[in-house]
Picture 1 (tube, rainbow, N blue to C red):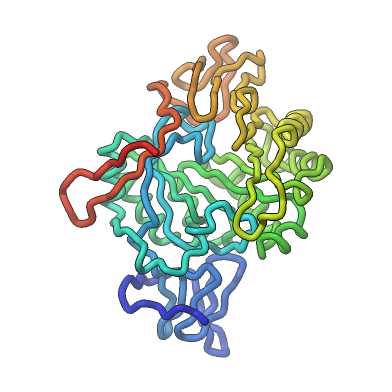
Picture 2: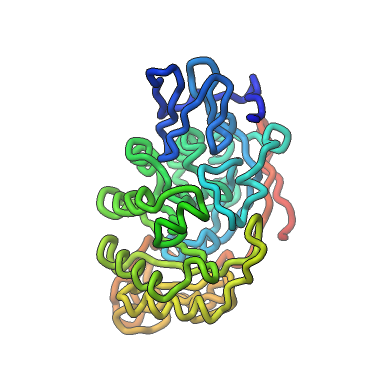
Length: 375
């Protein structure tokens, strides 16, 4: 049974219409939830109250942290910079392998959430010296109204915006949502419809549509991440097919990150991804024509490093999230041959490194945000 929607914390939601039978259909994502009064959508945070849709997590977060941009992961978006990261609760997918399930599947959000207005978030990013903010931990698509308002507040203060998302969103909200984003990391969970249906409760094609939209109709810088799960989406044939599609539909310059799976949530019976699987996947993607392919969640300096596609020199050497060598000009050209590296760059100010700094925003207060010690 749905948890009752609180009388407080309701924010008018966009993207819905009333059906002939009296139900309201949510038009935000392809789940197309059809709701009676008092019901919540599959994402849990959007619901019907009377004859309107509401968002129940506007202005509230599951927590704030300052991270390295490389943790999103984004390796070609102002490398070495820090990013203020936050999410809310809920999700519009049902991934059995969710690595953030305690947030995405939260059902006690009214008791757990910290409050922060868009202006407070933007001010905090400025005061902490963050280049950008990330909507992450759970999918920002489901709190689009909040994310877009935060983005406006951040852009007013010259703070960049990053969406970490599965890209499961309808066309109209997709246009409005990504118009507010400077960068995105899109989770391409697999390259088969069967995987999407059985393991995530969603479909592949809407995600591919989002990727083609980002490439051909926006200026959003985006990178892709695929979590490789042994026996489910890690076959050489699937990786080759996915890489070939990326080359043909998105281009050779889109960075692709292969990450290692760790048993979690409802998928504890599958072992962690061997390092060799990621290394082989990286080679297959490069052989398919992709210029920038990375490995994640394993220690592999080669797989962390950016190489110039022209002269093959290592231009950004990374060890985990620490940048050990940076050999690019301010506009992202190789120091050895002058070739342009794809991405967004400016003057390199050093590496933020492997810090993960929790932040408590003082809601409705003029005092500075409280920064906890590294964890």
